[in-house]
Image (cartoon, rainbow, N blue to C red; front, side, top):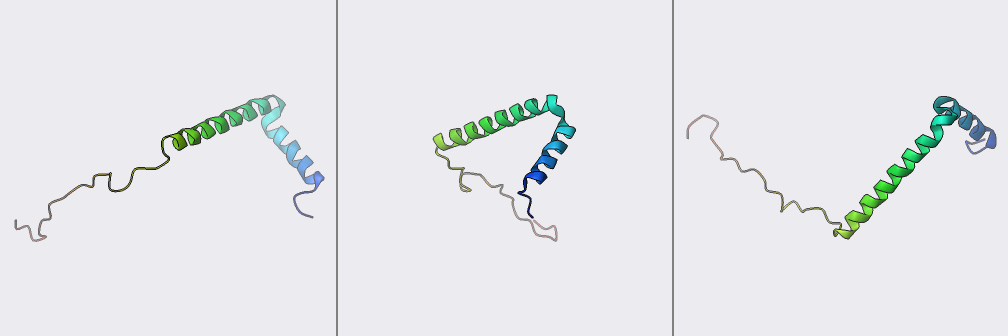
Length: 73
């Protein structure tokens, strides 16, 4: 009696239609498709650039002069 029965999916579909409305649903799905396409394009561009992030050695770390806690220099 899992969530895979047809009656459960019909109820979920009806709730989605009530929340989004029949007119908004195609727009929402179109926006979702555009987002997925841009995500895939971003992954493809990353793969062409070599796909490697800069190593930690390439990032300069700040250097601070150590001073004694008692205030003497």
